[in-house]
Length: 393
Image 1 (cartoon, rainbow, N blue to C red):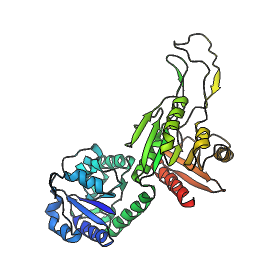
Image 2: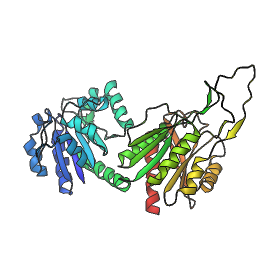
Image 3: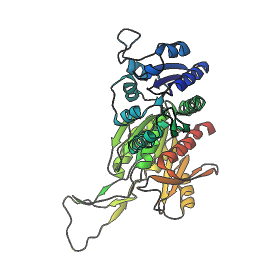
Image 4: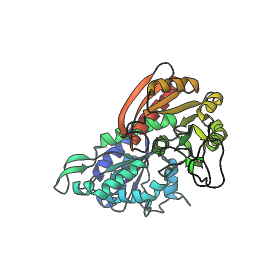
C-alpha cells in the first residue's frame, strides 16, 4: 500500500512521526509531504530516517528530472492522510486552494483522503471550521475527529489530534474497504426524471438526488470507477469519472443501456417517474380544465435485469405503504441482486431530506435494517452491503 502522508504546521507533528513509523513498519510505502510551517516543528530529515524515502517540501521538489511532484505523488497514492490538519489547511481544502505542494496534491489525488484535525478548541468549534469540515465530509473525505483533553496552548477542550494508533487503524480499514471495490466499474442513476406536458409544464417528483450522489462519493472513496446518470437533482453532481445528464425516463433508459455493458454493478438510485403524458404539446395548454392522459414509462430496472448477465443490479424501492412486500416483489420481478427500501411517507427521511433510513433485502431471504442517519452514513452501509455481494458470490 502506498500512503501519501501530509503534515501541516502544528505541535501535533510529533504524533505524525509515530504514525509514519508504524505505517512504514507495517510494510507501507510512505511518502511524506511537509508544509513550510510543519518543517518548523519537525525536520524533513526525521521523516526521511523513519521512511527511508525522500521527503517532499517544495512545490517543484522532484527527485527525478522533469518530475512534477504533486502529480506523481497523487498518482502513486492508495490513500492520502493529512495529520495534523490545521484550521488553515482544512479551509484551503474546502475552498480548493492549491498554493503549496500538500494542497496541490490534495486536488490531484483520486484515492481516499483522511483528514485528522488538530487545533485550539475554539478554532475547532468555530462555525467556519465546522462548515469546512462538513464540506469535506460531503465530498467524501474521511474525518478522524480530534480528542478532548489538555491542549498545547494550555486550554482544555476538543482539538487534540487523534492518537497515532487510531490514525493507522483508520488507514488500514480504508485500504481494506477500497481494495475490494478498487477498479470496479459502477453505473449509478440519481435524481428525479421529468416528463414534459407542454412547452412550459412537466411532471416530476420530489427526489433531490442526495442519496444517489452520496453513494457515488462513497464508491469513489473506495477506489471504484463511477459513471453517474443524473436526472433532475437539487444538489451538484459529485466529482466522478463520467456524468451523463438526462431528463426523461426514456433518456435514462437509453443512457443505461448504452453504458451498462462496461460496468460490474448497476445501482438504480434514481426516482424514475412511472408515467408520462400520452401526448406532449409544443405550446402552453390553456383552458379552465385540462385533462391529461398518462402512459406507462419503460421499466428501466426490469430492462437491465433481463440483460445484466453476471453484473450486480441494485435497485431502490421508495414507498408510502406496504414497503417490505413491495420491495420483496421488486427484487424478484426485476431480476435484482439487492433492493434498498425506504419509506418516503416519513417527513424526516427520504425525498429531499439530508437523512434516510433503509431496509436492505437480498436474494435468499437476507434482510438488514439501518435506522435514520445522514445520507452519507447510509451510503456507507449501502456500499458495505453491495461490497458483500462479491464475497457472497
